Image 1 (cartoon, rainbow, N blue to C red):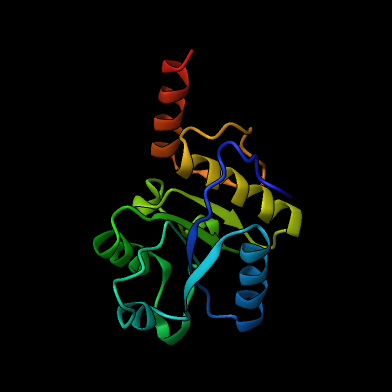
Image 2 (cartoon, rainbow, N blue to C red; image 1 turned 135 degrees about the vertical axis):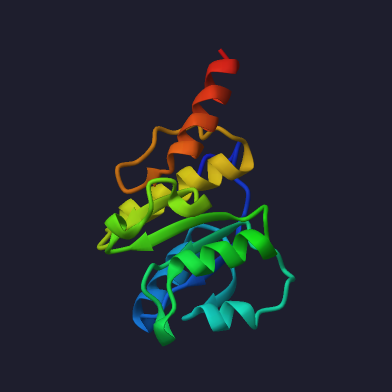
Length: 159
């Protein structure tokens, strides 16, 4: 799935996933879509140990992580360390995400298809490069209420 060249921006992506095979699969899809993986972690502790540079544009964060840590704590750390990063939970447990998404921007539910993941990544790329996204929101991505509101109001202002 090739993103629209008019709004494409190669993103720097942080992957926080404790299942090694899934992390590798996500990394391959991110790179196939023209983006760069700037870091991978399996737990909150590994994210804490990361250097502050490069700054990720997008963080893909699982909810249940290694060493008894969780995606909500990782999301808070990312918001504090890299406030400009867009955070998306990638989880089989979307019901564990609070209604306000704890400041995250959305969720991609597991299991996901390759095309569904790439569609969500393209949509997020558009939203990061030139909000709001030009494409329709794919069914593989659920935007947090605050993000829907911001992108909706920007879309209405452009009319």
